Length: 484
Image (cartoon, rainbow, N blue to C red; front, side):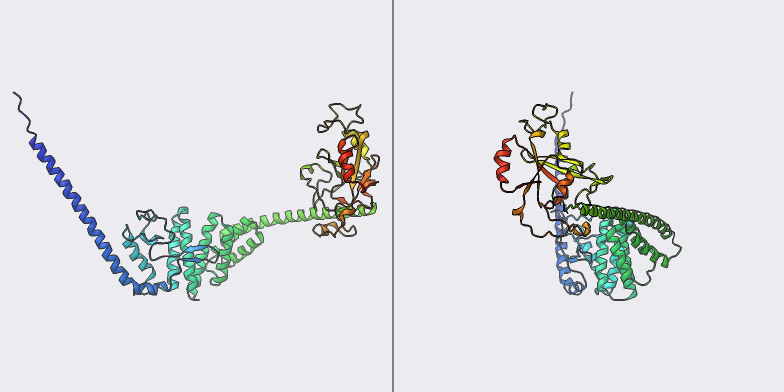
């Protein structure tokens, strides 16, 4: 026979468990309220006590925002919630993984760590007699905090830089004692060490120069000079690097790092001087060629002016292959010259760039290679792709140039001195288009007394067989045409 189960025992146990849980929750709520009351009372007492202390401390503390000597805005310590505070709504501080002594922001009142951080903040700015610390002492304290962050590794470099900036602010408020000067120089040198690792070489040089200038004379060691020399080497300022190396060796003549760096800088400086001499040689050679070109143009009656066309896309492989001063220099062969020449086809808005047009060559010499001689000789192979109507044949073409497109250089002076000079005012209404017979040579055109070479000789090609020539070109230039 089966014995019935007595469920009343289980119900009693369940009721007891529920009661215990309720009692535990009530106890926790009471403890939580008690802590809140204690924090509120402590805050009230702290505020009352801190008024007198705060007034004295605020005289020495920097403003919440100040600008450092290198132009950076720095956050100073605050008595409460910082204007930059980006903590979450629950009041948790981003510095909780650090000891409260190293926190940069005060937690919100009533949150975890607030009381501890408040007490430690007072310890930072007050001495054992409960008086505000001297700026010299605060500078040393913040320097040590920066050193600790520096030793913790790259992750904390930014925090170390913040501490060094505040240390510098206090050091500047300090006196002129040797100890304060030594501290000031050490702060700058330590900040330079971090920036050297971060690759901020300009900042390294500035800090080291300030440390050498305003620190004790001489500095206690050669680290500052070494860091400055390394940064200058990276920046390619090898002469400045040499100066810093020599300054460091004056302090420690046997320093192995400086001696090694001295050899490296000397080798780089030797190579730099060699490169500079080569560049100077090239410049002098180009200047000599320019002077010879100027004399040749002057002897032939050519007038040359600055470049006015965008020819960069055409320059590769051009004669002379030099654009110093704004236009490619002509090449030379025997007693002649080869100029880069631009041919413009205004009807179709096309252009062609001839890299080597000899002075003794006629326009017919070039056009008959580029276009068919007549319509009868035209094929799909020799017709220009843009000449859909087949009007551009040598027997129908006319070539024109334009007078005084630019102001001429003074041909009796070096061109190099006139590249940036402003041209005289020119009456552009008097410019004319000059018809160039196809049998005329390039030399004939450039020697025309009214033609100024606009860097690259430019000519306009039209076809008498096209409607553009009759309806547009001739009417536009009516009364302003002449024959060469």
